[in-house]
Image: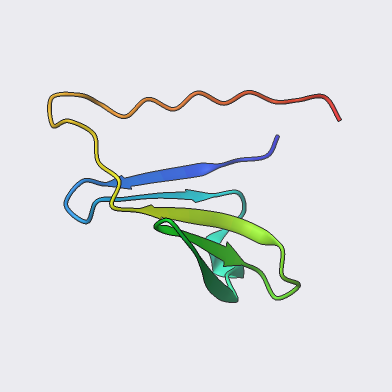
Length: 70
């Protein structure tokens, strides 16, 4: 089964999601609207970072994942 890693940095106000090992990162590309794409050497997106992301301090971050049949 594939593994996805989600990191929320409350102090830095960033949400980072990796679809593969982050060691495969080759280049980052800012897309605008405070989103950065992390890409491997072949140009495939392997993760993204949402800048200026925050949730109220009293709440926790919940992540739901759904898969779509190929």
